Length: 413
Image (tube, rainbow, N blue to C red; front, side, top):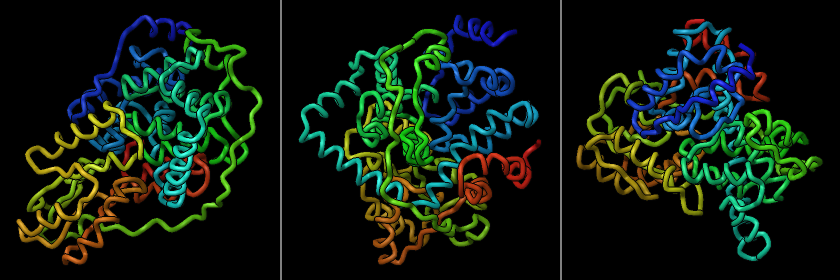
């Protein structure tokens, strides 16, 4: 069947993913999608057919972002059905997220610099009436650019956008509406269920022409028309000649910080579950004496979070922790110290937190924990330990290494 006929057939169907924030729902979505990760995904993945039709994409990112299901589980399921060659496109999409995390881990200054820039732009909004009005119109989906306005509404209403729509949206935000990229990245991070500091920040930098210096992504009317199945065609509405944004800071590469191997943890410990890895207990060699969860969602932005994104993270944490207590405020140290005292434990084990709000919250708590005689052990998954060192240049350097990474991790090829 020709691709255009296949797309026409898919467009007649209805499949809206059930974004229930539980591991069971994530595994169910994986089972639904796994058989489509070959030719169907390869040919149709770039089409944004509507919020009601997601047959052609996995829509697994909200669960993977919180590791309710892991990248390794997804790859195992896909490569159990398809050969690597048949599912190569989808496998590479899994590694894009891994690449972003590994790159940011080796360029940790990008995240705090983005936060400084965001606060500066928020201050500008409070002083510039025209900027404030344009910013408000963009977030409300009232720009007059039909496709952009639909995506703005969909983002706030559902907490999700197709990856291609995210690129178009960011390009229009930056180059057509001429709004600061930091405010757009913040809008996404506040509303996306899969809002991830690395993927979101670096993708917006990429569209702006910062991440790949001097090479911005320009949204074109013809491209939008084709890949929305002619639903939108914003001819004469979009900027066609643009100047890439410039980052005045040259972010040097740093070594990936050390972490603890799960097999080396011998003493009794308190398990700290965070929203970066809600299944961390699965990699440990023996169970904890006690468990406590901790949310850092509010660290995504100084602006209010979207209800959908906040609900997904919080409900996922309650699902992952069961009856165990959960810290839902910004300062973690007092609650952790009390939990350790209650169970007479001097060791806290948690999943290694990549650059972002969880890592910041842990850093802020560690001085108090150390003063209380409590050590914190960060456990990095083998998947990250093997893949992140390949994220030193552009993605395509990692792409060449994917078969090697999979082989080291004992995946079927």
